[in-house]
Image (cartoon, rainbow, N blue to C red):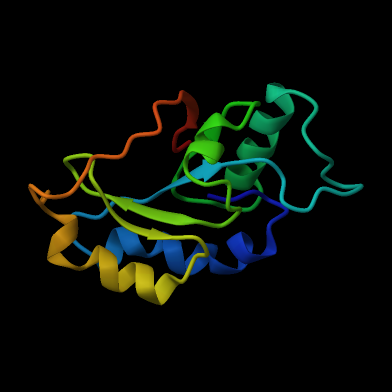
Length: 140
């Protein structure tokens, strides 16, 4: 999760982008959420179009290489995942959340993504799905 105005997200982007290439079978994406620190240059979004424009800027100007999903203007997906501005979740191919961190720690995320728990669903693990709709900005 992140936004252009989140300094933690921006400072960890380069490391997180490498996970796709560093670990076989891993694909990462960004959920674009509300602006963490809106200001004069990038104010709070007034509508969904402004949010989409900021997410597009993240890809086109800032050079984000991962797929960017854009949360709805109401922030439902962000709320469903706990509302932290720079959280990380690892969801395996079966849709099971196998790792959660309220703050992005690239080292811990990489270790968890490389673990076997990410590849298969344990029968005892519960499935978590926020049940929300998000938009997607794909690779140009």
